[in-house]
Length: 325
Image (cartoon, rainbow, N blue to C red; front, side):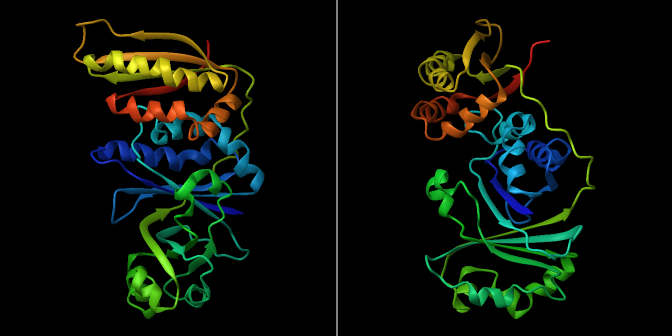
């Protein structure tokens, strides 16, 4: 089993309702994506950071239907991608590890996740002594981060080298653990260094959790039809020309490299609305082509220039994948 965590800091000014939308969308992923289990999301108790935890049954599931599933491409990416008018998270990090055999299953309680960046060649041995589960902490797994696409994440991929997942039955058990020498020593960078661990940085995330009941295993959808990718951007009327110019010079070019063809582009009439809208629709041959676009866009100069220059003009909008009826 592969255990995976996403960490999603929320943009300033995002209303609580939108954060709740993201939490629900992530938590319900197991209803749609085959092979994804124990999907749960919550907001860290000490920051405006969403944590999404999940388990995959095997590597094939993780690298296969999860990445190209319509729910991931359409719903989850709406909140996260830099070119989405609905984006609410300014960055994200992903960590994973192989779940050892015999780890007890904790259905509900309080999760505490320590993300650590140990110096190159640092000895994690002193941590392992404290990582054993105990009376206050029935679930404890310490592992290296095994995200396989680190090389594509640049410097961000080097942020965390180790992950320590902890599970407590309730807040009282967590407080009791934090009062022990182990809890005190593993709560910050200075404490970890006192143990003799060369830690460059540490992030502690804490949130209550309740794993959902296992839904029926969803079917893997077929990908045999073209997809119409429609983006509607809401703008100040005076920004429309600049936005459209960047669409034409940068975004259309980036999408064309992935096989998408522009089908139409409209804007609201002048003097008819307080805000303007620009709607563009491109046709992808299939969702597999969308995956290729998502994989390549971070290194695509045209896509990056569009996100850098055009997206600050966007006040809101929608991003949808449609089929002909």
